[in-house]
Amino acid sequence: MTITKAACVGRPRGFDIDIALEQALNVFWRNGYEGTSLNELTEAMGIKKPSLYAAFGNKEQLFFKAIDLYENRPDSLFNIAFQHEHIADVIRGLLLGAAAQFTDCSHPQGCALINSTLSCSEASDSIKKTVLERKLKHKQQLADRFEQAKCKGELQDDCEPVVLASLMTTLFQGLSMQASEGASVEELQQVAAMAAEGILTVCVKR
Image (cartoon, rainbow, N blue to C red; front, side, top):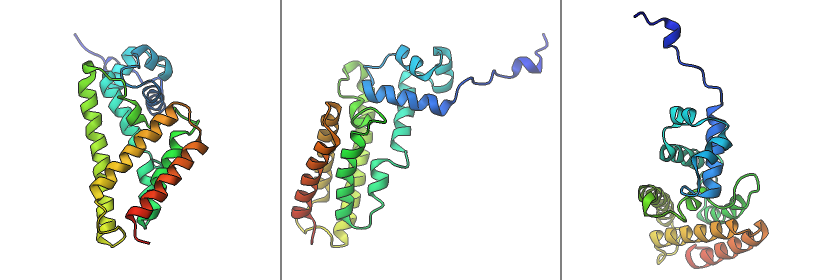
C-alpha cells in the first residue's frame, strides 16, 4: 500500500500551546495536584483529552511543565529579589515581594509550588517527592546567596546562612497559606515588613 505524503503530515494544533499551559498552571495553582481533574484541565485549556496527551503527556507530565513555567517566569520572586546588590534589599524584596505576588488577583492566591501538594495523599507520593526536591533547590539558592553575603561581610558572624534560608522558606509557607485563605495584600505586607525588620536587626550588619 502506498502512503501518500498528505497522510504522513500531522494535523496542525488548533490551540496555542503556551496559553493552554498557562491555563493548566492556574488550575493546578488553585486546586493543587490531586484536587485537579482532567476534565477541569481540558475545560480550562479549551482542548480535548487526546490533544492534551499529544501535546503534554499525562497529568503528571503536564503538572511539571506547568510548574516549570511558574518557576521560570521573568517576574518570579527569586529572579526579581536576587537582582539587588545588598543582602538587606534581597531580604526585603523576597518577603515584601512574596506578600505582593501571593495576593495578586490576576492569578490564584498563594504560591503555586506550595499550594500544589498541600493535600496530596500517598497515591501522589512521587509528585510530593519531586516538589520537595524543587523546594530544597530553592532553599539551597537562598543559602548560597546568604553565604555569599556573609563572605562579603554583610551578615553577622553568628548568622548561619542555612538557618536563615530555612527561616525564609518557613515565612514563604506561612504567607502563602495566609494568602490562600484570603488575607489582603496590606495585611501580608505588614507581616512581611515586620519579619524583614526582625531579620535585618538580628542578622544583617548595619
